[in-house]
Length: 197
Image (cartoon, rainbow, N blue to C red):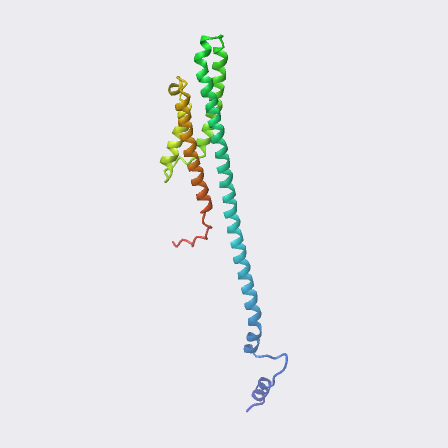
């Protein structure tokens, strides 16, 4: 055996604090790296989950605000349409009495315009594209628009108008309830897998 070989064998057999073998070093460092990697993975998962929950919460808040604004606009519209109806019914009597016709006509036109602005705002809140609720939504919007029909309400039939307004109000309640149920059931978004190409 040569002296170099003997020296190498002696070094390999002599354990010293600074001369650990590769296997010993790998075993000592593995738990540390494992802990660091698992901690980093847990932090990434927690951050992702927090972002998803925050997004879901924001969507719910926006939908709730949308529902509240729709509710307010529907109530405002029904009130404005009723004010127009009362003035419109009053026109026929005004021309025959004190000559207030032009003044009442102007007020009636203003009331109708105010009601139509609210109606258009309501219409803009509904999805115009085909969807499972389109038929119901269009029927509701048609009922609301019908409350401002000059030919239909020229006679001033308050009972019939009130009935149509009540039906529209009930339909609005169903739509608002439906939208609230959709908001409550919003699924938490999940990451989409990468598309293969």
